[in-house]
Amino acid sequence: MPLTRLASRWGAALLGAALVLSGSVASSATPDATPSQTPPPGVAASDGSPTSLVLAMPIVVPAGTASLLSGEELELYTSPTGVLTRQLDAVIDRPVALGVDPRILASIRILGTGAPESAIEWLDRLQDASNETFSLAYADADVAALSQAGMTDLSVPTDFVIDPSVFPNEVQEGPGASPSASPGVSPSPSPTTPAEPVVPTGEDLIDLPFTLGPVVWPRDDTVVGADLEVFATLGDAVTVLDSSNASYPRDAIPASARAGGHRIVVSNNDISAFLRDAVSAPTEAAWNSSMSQLTAALAGWTGGSATVLATFDRDIPSTGNRIAATLTELSTTPGITLTTLSRTLAEDPVEIGIVDRPVSAERITPLQSALQTMPATTAFASVLEDPSLITGEQRRRMFTLASNAWVETSADWQGAVEEFVAGAAELLSSVHVLDSSTINLLSDTGDIPITISNTLPYPVTVNVQVWANRAVLDVLDDSVPVTISAQSQARAAVPVQSIANGSAVLVVTLSSQTGVSIGAPLYVTTNVQAGWETAFTFVVAGVVLLVFVIGIIRTVARRRREGREAQ
Image (cartoon, rainbow, N blue to C red; front, top):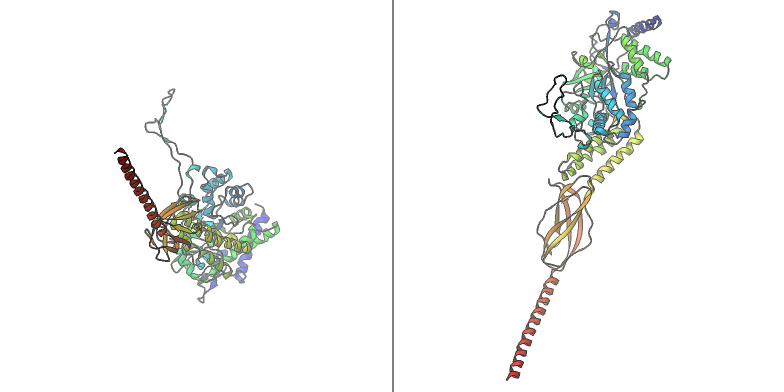
């Protein structure tokens, strides 16, 4: 190692200690009124004990509105210069914990044999990497914003429509096959059993498998105390909290913490800022300057043996073209030890308070308008035998809409929200009664034809209800079930009985098998002229009788005439 580089590192460490002693490197946490109980600043650096540092980085993609990435997007992102390739190349097999967007995993795996080769290779590399890994929210959703907007279930969706035909069959050898054969003797062929596609479950699609348990990673400076209760519904989850959201009873900001029973790992805001400046430095000189600040801050760490956490940002496209160089520098700098997140979580947690930093109304209000469509969508989904075909897709799109990748593109995001809300309204009208012209009923009993349209890609079953606004018609069956195939129409025949002649307005409504109203009522005018049928019947009967009587009279008259002639 060049002596100048080594000297600069130790110089940075000594400078950090001096800065801490003079109060220049301050904690970004909000201090409580309690006096500091930590050792005097600079002890960690002066006694030679290394600073333990843990790093975390998100693996994410640019903003979009689709619930899954397309094959074309995956091919682009995993190309040699793609964003996912560049992210993984910089940190693979390095001491960095990786938070992975499960939408990426699901998008690759659900394509089966149709997934781009580059995407499959990228996923294999990620699976084989020695890095610690954990799942982000689906689409790296802004979990704090969703919580504050009213969403209470932040779990990763597992309801996917999986096509078995894109997965290969698993060949199974039959029993009796010999594991080995004598030299010079050809082994006899063993029978095979019919193979079936090995179709993954929804849980298989979103699991790497990850090496760490549930982790919730909100955007910096966005959490309020109530959010932790929502995060806790994910199970024994650990929340990554920016230090500006935390208040400490002392100046040092160790990563391992607890807030009111909730497990926390705190990211040091100052050190994270230095780290992000270093990895995004545009020039070598700027990088050297940022690294000096970063190593100085770490050298001045006053938390003793407690680990400090620093996080990379979520910028897409990433400006971090010096990630690998920064990691190499940190791993070889005297006085800094890179550790793991699992070891950090094993350290005794420090009790902290939460400093509320709510998400801005400009972001919360649009999310609330999108979330308000979800109850109606869930109710409407009961027209399907498997409602999750709709609810799963809508939840995934909701998470995608709330992705942190949208934060820097507010104008485009507003348009995406409006598109989501409009799409939800269109979904609710996808099953409806078609308009009908006036219906004429000319008999005492008959069927009223009702045509239902279904534009969904799935078959639906609804009940058709009809009632008349006047007592000229009696509906004999007040609920007629009908199944409509995907993207087609079907006709229901509602039996009725005429009571009197006249016109009536029929009110036609639809409901699901669970009783949920579907769509808006349709009004159909009906003319009941059942008396015409009765009169017509009497007229016809009279004519028939008259013809019959005339025939008899003519027959009798002819016979009498023939009798007289015979005499």
